[in-house]
Amino acid sequence: MAAHTLSDLYVEELRDLYNAERQILKALPKIIKAASHDDLKEALESHRQQTERHVTRLEQIFEYLGKNAKGKTCHGMEGVLSEGAELIEEGPEAEVLDAGIIAAAQRVEHYEIAAYGSVRTWAEQLGFNDHVELLEQTLDEEKEADQKLTQLATESINEEAAQETEVGRERTVNADRADRRSTSTRSSTRRSPSDKRSRPTA
Ligand SMILES: [Fe+2]
Image (cartoon, rainbow, N blue to C red; front, top):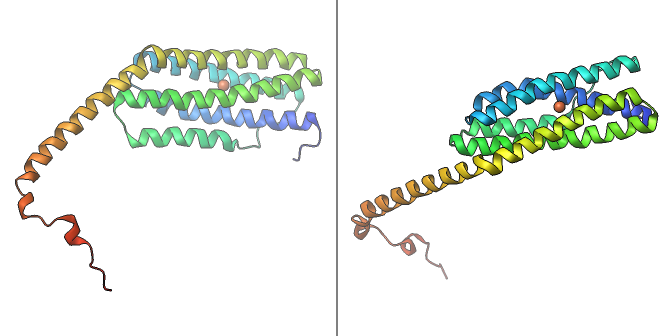
C-alpha cells in the first residue's frame, strides 16, 4: 500500500517496526549463545524478554487501529542483523566477539530508537493518545538497553577485548620472530627479489 497521508505512513512504519522486532526476537537466541561475558548474556536475555513485550504493544496498537500488523519486511533491520551474524561466523576471540556483539546490538537499538521516536511523534500529531503511551514505554526501554550496552562496553568488555588483542599481537610478533630465525638460516640460498623482476626488453 502506498503511503498517501501521514496516517498511511504511520501504519507503514508500525508494520516495519513490527517486522523488525520479530526479526530481533528470532536472532537474539543465537547472539546470546555466542556472547561470553555473563553480564552481556544477561543484558541481552533481559532485552529479549522486553522485545516480546514490544511485539505485544505493537499488536495492541494494530488492534486499536483495526489493521493487520503483518505485510512488510524491514530491510534495514535485515541488513543490521546479517552483519551481526557475519561477525559471529567469523569467530573472533571471545572478548573481541563480545565487543563486536555490543556494537551490533547498539546498531539495532539506534535503529529502533529512531523509528519509535518518529512513530511516537506521529501518534501525538494524529491524536492517538493511547498509542503514544505504549510507544513511549518501548522507546524508553530501547534507550535503557542502549545505555546498558554502553556501560558494559566502557566498564569492562572493551578493555578485555583490547587486552586480548594485545596478547594476540604478542603471539604474532613471537611467531614472526621465530619465523625470521628459521628463514634467515636459509636466506643465503634465496634469490633476491630483484632477480624475480623481468628485465627490460629495450
Ligand atoms: Fe524493541
